[in-house]
Amino acid sequence: MTPEIDDHFALLKAVHGSDSLARVEEMLEPKLRRDQRHPLQQAAKWVLPGIPQVPWHDPYAYPELRPLVSALEADHAQIKAEQRLAWEQRRSEFSDYEHYLVRQRDWQALYLYRDGALNTAAESPAPTAYKVLKEHAVDTGLICPLLESHFSTLLPGASIKPHCDLWNFSINLHLAIDIPQGAAIRVAGETREWEEGKCLLFDYSFEHEAWNGGDRARTCLLADLWHPDTTLPERAALTMLMNEIQKMMAG
Image 1: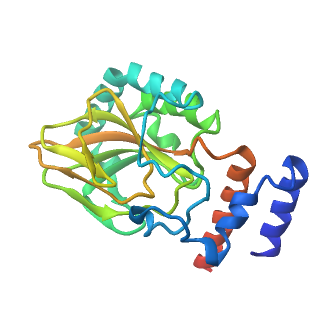
Image 2: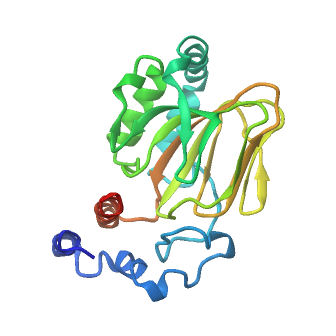
């Protein structure tokens, strides 16, 4: 670790206790990084010990997440109408989705949150989703500032190849906006279909893939949230740690 990371960790432990970052520090031990991983988690780069190895989660199981899930589902009809209008009339505001592994032209995104902040340009085309995300995920600290929230649109015939995301300390929430027949997602070998107006929640450190075999675009609203089993000091440490690692890799 760098002196900056060491100093930040020391400050957090002084406030929250000497053991408050034990799992983060264990994650950084090379000999332990791949210990006790689920076979379908092996490609993830960072696995925080002690996070339950559960691919699929009940979106309503966590009190911390319930207000966000309820608000998204309650406002689904308005969110869908606004997204459809933006797709029809403001297509230039969507862009190819840039996954850390690949960029796909048949996977389009309209970002509501990115690079640690709300994308204020998205408030005009998607006011309801923007408001719900701001009030129930950003202002409450649920969203993982290392990642993003966006409308995810898979064009007909598009697929996302099987892969693991980078870590297990954030979790992926999907609100199903517009779902044609033939669209589905598989996580850790279990396939599910989105139910329009409902949320799915899964741990994307497990191998997963998705496809749209339908005759129109499939759209979900995605939000990368802190895993409910992480603590506040761990979240602060992980944010600083991953930002520093990204700086070192870029430099």
